[in-house]
Length: 482
View 1: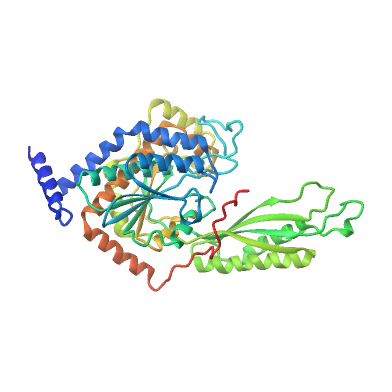
View 2: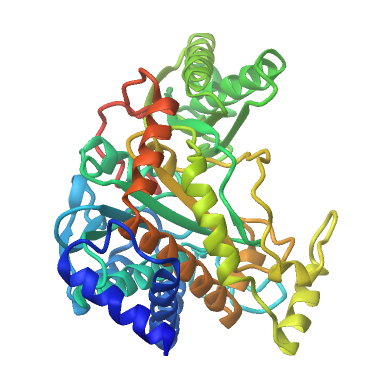
């Protein structure tokens, strides 16, 4: 009876327009429970969305079906959709509500090339498929949409006030979709941005990411018969290999936290033809964005030197560049409490069998399956990955989390991660993330002081820095996977 009275009092305050000034914790918990039940009630819908996108497995900037599915799901639930934003056909912003606060939830949906995989515990590429969701972005998109719809329900019922937005961002895997959205000013009115990511554990993001910059270096030479008249040729592949050799020597003379990696995307077509064209795709990463820029400039010099030495010509195209990730402790502490409220994942007997079979394919230390049920404490750890969420974190206070969608010990960008992503357990873990994001969003809608404190911390982190995209003023690299 007491809980019912508190809830009715809370509703009355909502309609009076003063509810968001001070709400009893018990009333907030009731709202969170209601939102959690709403998400759970639509479990089959979100599972269908996630697994449909898992099956589509579309590469960056080509996610037409995946993006349309998420847009239609939101549109069917009353969201206003702005499609094709920031020069990207598959990018969108979905909005519901009016006024402040404006809370953003990020969504991704691109797959990785060369990682086609079914949902079995052995390496089994799907016939006629090249891509695979080995980073779980099919779950990322579906989970974020689920959270936004739960928030929309509360807004529609008048239990909270403000605006919820979903930023559908394509090509996170090397295309930098969010960078263009930030550069376009799409986050300028947002108060807080929330994101999540599939993982092998449950944790609030409390570690930065590496800033990075990527480019394709293209060498142009002269073709000739490689045996009959090699002296008449100038090998573009020699230019690529000369560049690679110099970069590999350079590794000894750069900060040890730096990561440089590359693939030769075109090395010629036949051994008996001197290649007149060759291309190599480079990534440069470091915890500090300024060092990324300076090291990238040195990589460019190796390409120039290689072209000079092989009598070829070289040009390059910057493909992507992202900032490091700013951690907002105020928001992280709030998210930690909400993730602990949600709890971790429990496996069925069949899932434990699958998990043991999958773990037999791992190398290194293998964690217990039971760790999927544990919420990690809030702590700083070394992070060697990069994300375009970093750019978002430089223009608006941002917070994120991960849940154990993959069997503990599963490395990201592996066939094992793609296999896990096709399982019901991955969807259940996605629902956990949806609930945690929703609970934190409810706190933000109902507690203005939380947003104020997060913004004050954000200003201290930014200092005098004026945001500038590391990829410059280029247009989206819509064909970067070609």
